Length: 180
Figure: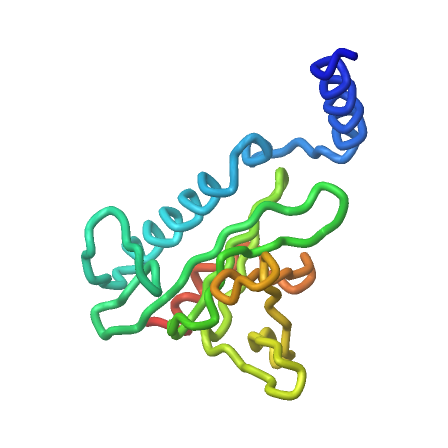
């Protein structure tokens, strides 16, 4: 029994299956990155836009391991989540949302091979005691955030459909309306 050959066969089969869903476009290199790299790109992008808009941020050095990614001079805390579009569907899974963290806003940046999108939502988590579930308010609708692993109450994900997001071309105007 050749275990390496078995695994290679399964990998080749899955690769061929998923290859038909891959898109090409201006951002198609995003498909090659791991989730951590995608998150770094989104965070750096949002910070660059904030600087260009003249929004002053507190300087905490290169890496913040806290409840937020950006803290404005006025104390407004902002978490940035970045996700790549799923291969088989038009959804984005924004991972690593901790319901115990307090931030005023969550900025979601969604990347596909062809375009970029965003959504700015309130960071206030809603806990429904009856259902024992956490929710975020997205466009006046409660969207459930789901634990990424069973019994892990510190790492949740929010799944948004492409239709829930706005085109990146509107990002600057939305930021100005909220923060300027």
